[in-house]
Image 1 (cartoon, rainbow, N blue to C red):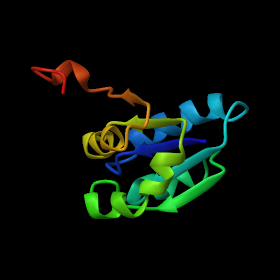
Image 2 (image 1 turned 45 degrees about the vertical axis):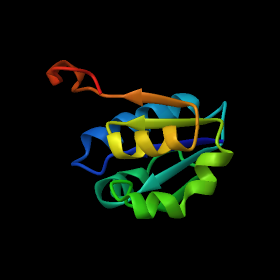
Image 3 (image 1 turned 60 degrees about the vertical axis):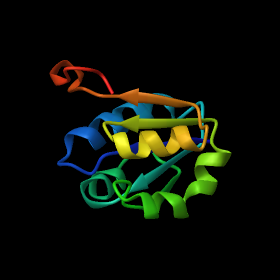
Image 4 (image 1 turned 30 degrees about the vertical axis):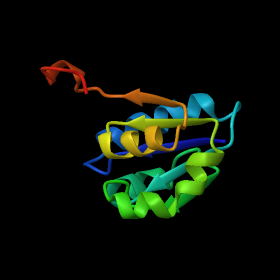
Length: 107
């Protein structure tokens, strides 16, 4: 299983995730943590399962910890909060940040 998250800020992050997920669909079972705009657009994406979770709130991430622990990969688009949580769970992760050019230091 590949666990996915796109920060729910406008439609840019979830659009990127849907595009990536379309390429991964034939290779993996895709589960997405969604809320707000990521839920709105994610429901039309190629995900096998959508889980309501505001990934900007650590308490909600903690409730989904078992998904992080069972996943082979965490695919994260622009959400530093869920990225830190995945690291805490020791889940292998791939990070997508289309705004990396604006960081003074890459976090």
